Length: 222
Image (cartoon, rainbow, N blue to C red):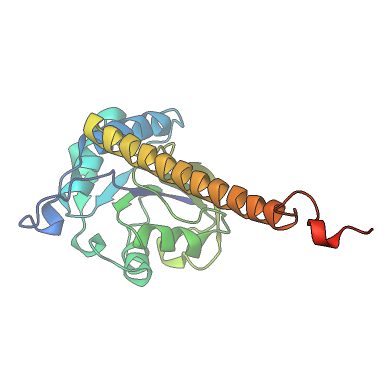
């Protein structure tokens, strides 16, 4: 029996166009969410024999947070160049080459590879692994080379709670002003519509009434 822990790195900063993708670091939210995820994982009392991480800075930083939380020895950490920007087939080849002396392996990488690997291994309703999520997969095999399609069981899954983006005071003011302007526009449209309706009603009423108020003298019967 083997256990594979599939980890997606935390949220990262990618504002600077001159920084290569592989060097983008975790942002403050990413570091916080990974720390919470590592705490949830620690509660499972499951220690990896080996941690393979993508060479990307955000993945290595994610791995470091797990290492400190789980007290994983440095010799059990390994940077795997092939994980960066890898598709499912490439990641599977890495898994198939794992040493069978390792029973519990953590793999820290990126989407879409991590989600595709999870979908390949287990029947799961997880549509997409978000940043800082992890999945613990139990593999019904004796050798890593035997890992194949839908031969595994998802025994634990964690994903951070999805929250709406926080707005700064200027963005909140702009949003409020836009909403206020929309309400004013709707009110003006309502008033114009009301005036038009009242005008039509007035025309109908006036056209159905004799303008003189009584019949003319020549039309009176004698």
